[in-house]
Length: 606
Image (cartoon, rainbow, N blue to C red; front, side):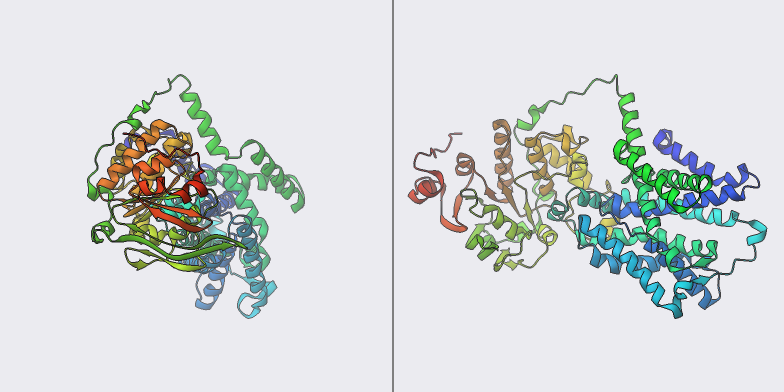
């Protein structure tokens, strides 16, 4: 703990936060200054809350200030009804905002990218319109007047200053908790690649709705007291689009996805806004200045101020440090044995020897008028290494996607261990023991190799989501799997820094963290050098010896024939033939339809 406090990344922000808390004592008779700092803290609170869904998960909301308005109206309406000051209803404001966010998030989070941005703005304007229409409750366009507390004249803004300071501190603690949890790791995985996150067992829907709800809490809490601070709440002020744009600009300026970036950005943008107000007349000047700041940020600080400064500081500190050489020969070395209990799921043990672990029955999938998969039925025996080959466009990857839940087949069924999983979600299939890799590797490129391995979830529960990112036995098991793959020296490197072949091995290691009963490998040898192909073969054989079943799509036919005990050949979306490697090698239909009459199908001698 003492070593952490010596880190400038820790003690500098904490020191500045302490200095902020002492501001009323440092600056005597500072009503104006306190008012400005309250505006800064409010924007920092909102930017930090917004960061939980937009910075971590990548779902950019331009209507998030709606939850500030919900908090304001919650405090004002209930305060009048119950005869108490709205500031005492801050927890209620946060709760109401979280509930509304959960209900709204279940709808709007179905959209992605630009569609989500537009829908978030539409939600803001819709609720603003509802507030104008519901005049008996909200006062309509006239709004609600909130009587100031009796101590307002005596103490001025100081009590409000410390209330907002407390909310800011709690918001920072909430953000820190989320970022250091399995929930935070899952949100970053969703930001990198949502489809891949689902494939490794992350319930993306639950994670997004949870983050969306948590992000609304600081808005609702601050809104309840902010309405009392202003002494007036109306629809245009509570649900203004400019507030949403300003808080987004604050998070982008400071550095979204970081803990302190949105806080720093909130103070910068709020001070710039105040400067524009003091030095010019009219709202147009403020909008102009904020627009200039946005352009400058996009052009010169696309990652935000804090990440840019941190990167330059790291380069400065390491300018004389020699680059560490990592001996990559360990990757191609013989594979060590891993205890079966460490990597295998219970689903493997429960299967009956010799029975099909995975089955598909009459699977059909069309895209427009193209029949990508046309009535495929096949079974994968437990403990086998089965090959799935065929020319490009024969439907191999489409069949994989139907098996894993990426696509919903037009008809047919998928069975895992005798259970029909056709309607199951992608992450549910992953939890059930069905793992897969992708033709083009889909690592979470902004995360380290170790983070890539601790992100997968064997199950989803509140306890798992709230657990520390590096807590429990996941880290030790991740390091054990990395050692098994010969990748232990790469755990601190980002996924984007690895070679394509190394990324393939890390992706397989990701799948092993789920303790899968069957692994679907989509062209695992594509694009990697022969040395790593040999390593990959050793890994597959070793895992298979320990009970893992494999289904492999691959164009490297000698590799397929040397590894597999059974091979299925697809052509035109149908099963052309099935058999042993020897039968497939000599099948005239395969030679003519897929490989050509001059193909050399000799199996390499080990």
